[in-house]
Amino acid sequence: MAFASPSFYSTKSDERKVYRYERSPFTSVSMSALNYQATDRIVSLSKPKLRKDTTVRDGFSRYMSNPKYSGVTPTAARANCSSRLNELALPVKRHQNYQYELPLPRHVPDGALKYEASPRINELAVPKKLS
Image (cartoon, rainbow, N blue to C red):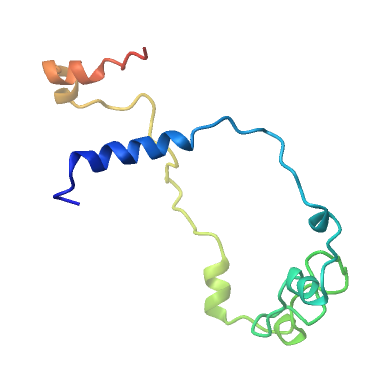
């Protein structure tokens, strides 16, 4: 396209003008689409997949509630934790003088108190005007 003639561009712009027309907000649907009956294959594809590699049993669906089924296998329900895992599950113990938040009022450094903004910083601080 590097050596295309100027007439090439003019013909392209003329073609684009042909496709500009007002479209109606209403669309027509054919009778065959309205009378369509889904095949067994389409119905089977519309159902969610049940994967074998997960802990979810066959027949369990998130769309049907089964209060007896929790998704946890009986073996997992009988499992015992190690002492290290129980230790990690406990909340962290803080020392008696631990402060959760910084004291108020906080100390401000002298350099921050003496700072003078440059003209560029002042220029960037002005909000943009929407027009």
